[in-house]
Image (cartoon, rainbow over all chains, first blue to last red; front, side, top):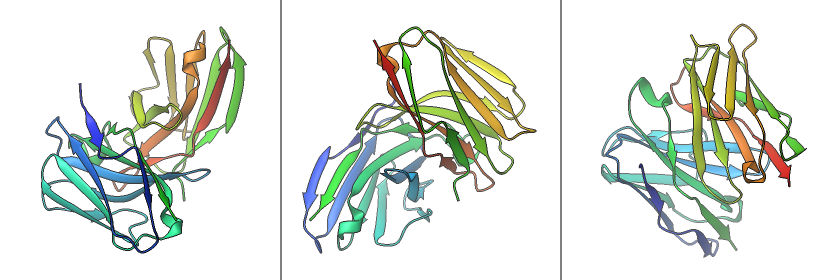
Length: 115
Length: 110
């Protein structure tokens, strides 16, 4: 079974702090994604990566950066956390068959509260 | 704008009843997927239907796809309390990324 793990289930940070969210997958998937989920807005793509050291902006990349130094690990970085980044963050991975639209496997999510 | 929009936003039924959720999308697709999310958890893939397929089954799940109407439906038969969750459709638009709808919240009462 594919397993995607996220470093924290719950996180509380202060405004201005630098925040690291880590995601690890164990199925040798090329593609990895970071989403945020907010009530009424569904899932919105922040960044994705289709290979080591490769990254592409999603729909809402402002205020975020990412790092993919190893195939299994994809990190989301909030350079200076703000209260409007309070959200549920979901990481996912997938194989590259047929482009990036194939089945995605999700981690359990990190609920981030920025005070 | 969202590629997929689910309808209804919320649905409450009794155990044993069938639950039907609909998804509409705007542009042509290669495939459409349905995912489930239990409260406060990650999404779990349920079923994928390709653009050249019209119907697909998996256990108590039945998915239909009408590309002429740009719509899909998910039917859960003989629902159980454990089916209580949010259900999302996801489409691969021209950018090849998945675009998720806002979901249908299903509540199944024992």
